[in-house]
Amino acid sequence: MLSLPGNEAVRVVPQAAAWKGGRVRALGAGDPDRIGPYLLRARLGGGGMGTVYLGTSPGGRPVAVKVVHPELADDPGFIQRFRLEVELARRVQGFCTAPVVDADPDGPRPWLATLYVAGPSLLQAVKECGPLPIATGWILAAGLAEALVAIHSSGIVHRDLKPANVLLPADGPRVIDFGIARALEGTMLTRTGLVIGSPGYMAPEHIRGGPTGPAADVFSYGATL
Image (cartoon, rainbow, N blue to C red):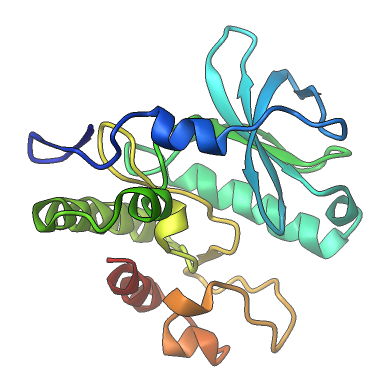
């Protein structure tokens, strides 16, 4: 069951195993078993920046630990962007995101730990269970709008809002992955002419490599819905 704001419970996935069992994988031979103070239990996923693991704190609390790929750890430009990601993610705290609990952007293998959010992504839910009912879609729309207000109020443009970056825990949608976020004051660390994002959800000005502000996130919000 997925509970979203409005005291309404809507069935999105038949049971947790429908998504969890298919997405959490055992650690492989090349995976670390510990990062910082966190014991790594399983692999949650990965992308161009790094791999995300399910870990536990020394006190046993579950966390999601993003570990940068080794080849990127030696790239000063990338580390500068990753350091900014940590800083920006720490600005946005609360129930609309996965709060940052720890990070080491300057270690041999830079990493970022957030609170573990137990729920499928919107992408997984739709792929495995089909389109959401209209009533659920309206509740999701309200929750994502609330998240964007919090993100923009913190001075951040997400720049990669898409179904894969929306998690659906029992207490409402969470927006994650500020990997290509940019502060509203205009910090730009990518090379001139390099456009980073997910084309199917990017605003026209973002695709053209022009300045992107909160309106670009609103475009991505509409595309996501």
